[in-house]
Amino acid sequence: MTYETGQVLAGRYRLVERIALGGMGEVWRAHDQTLDREVAVKVLLPASAQDEGFLERFRAEARHSGGLTHPNIGTVHDFGEEDGSAFLVMELLQGEPLSTLIRERAPMPQGEVTDILYQAALALQAAHDADVVHRDVKPANIVVDANGYAKLTDFGIARALNEAPLTQTGEVLGTPHYLAPEQAKGEPAGPLSDVYALAVVGYEMITGQRPFSGETMVTTALAHVSQPAPQLSDEVEEPLRTTVMAALAKDPSLRPQSAAAFAEALRLPPGEVPSHLVAGAMAAVSPVIVGVPADLGPEGTLPTSVMLATTIVGAGGAPAGVGITPISGTTAGQDPDAAVHDTRRPAWLIPAAVALLVLLIVLVAMALSSRGSTAAPVNRGAITRTTPATSGTTQATAPTTTPTVKPSTATTTTASRPSVAIATPMPHKPAHAGHGKGKGGKKK
Image 1 (tube, rainbow, N blue to C red):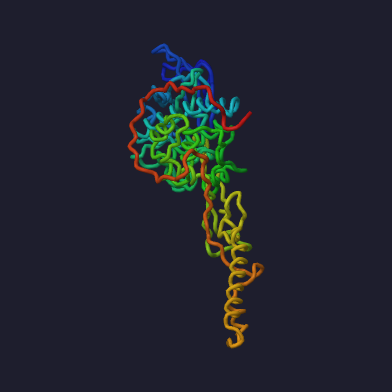
Image 2 (cartoon, rainbow, N blue to C red):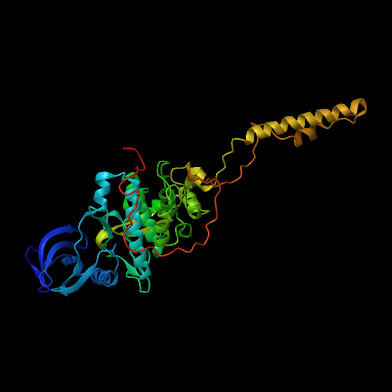
């Protein structure tokens, strides 16, 4: 069925104005004639309603969202099906999508960034406590009002952890720019995948840029797996800087271990580095070594038989693209040879070899001098074989190292990540002392 202004759904919800359109459905501002209040009604488009998979996801959204109650989560009021379609009745949120604020104002003040991230993290923790993973955290799904109050919305592709998945094996759900590495690889999304996506949102608020991108949705998704995260500027103050970077670690075990832990780190005193997250922040910016099979193709490239098939479902749940892309064996942004095995000589190797050669020559000369005229004849061939080659012929192999980039922090040591018991934050918007102030990650 099609929808138009003035239409009444379920004898109760009168459609007033269409306010959003997505691949799966559209959102209308509507009037609840029973309770005399303004609401938002999300309706499934006719083509999507004919697809049992989309319809079941829509029902799942109603179940997941309807069971969540938190001040920083948009409330779901009702769900219904009629005339071969379905609709979801939600709280009508006042404010702007965070995506609009980023487009118009980024880089945003750091105090404001901290407040929004903190509130969104509390919302995610409430969802995770209910065993619901959002799986599509992005700026468009966070609405911020004029007072800086943020609400997380659109659990359209969320999944309850205790339910069977609605996707096929290897299918990737989410928006490519905000996919956690494990999601991009087709692995199940978990609570820490949401934390990663929220860190991408934070990075974008701070800098006005997304940390990972590509020419296609598939290459963008793969960038989360193969590329190190760009380091935030030293102008980004602690604890915001280290908290966001640590949550971008490709290894989930190095990220803040819950959305609540992410929120708690953000509330540390200004200037304090969350020391238990330093290792994660360092890992996030370290070059990524991509494994390469032994059967390399010409010039170290992968054979065409080694491919990655990925299905990415875009906003609203509609399939956004299917791609088959060769997996590069090189490290993004690095010398192609360095990603497989770094054989470049360290800068100290040649001077050290020369110094060693000089020392051996001096020792040999002293030994010959001490023997005098009665010394046995010198076997010069033996000397030639045992003396190290000159710097021009030295073939020493440099030790294989993995470069690391240390975040600019107040500490000079890297502490191991301790097991920290995190108190559950109060479920309301904090009165952040720095709200609306501070400076962005880069100068305008």
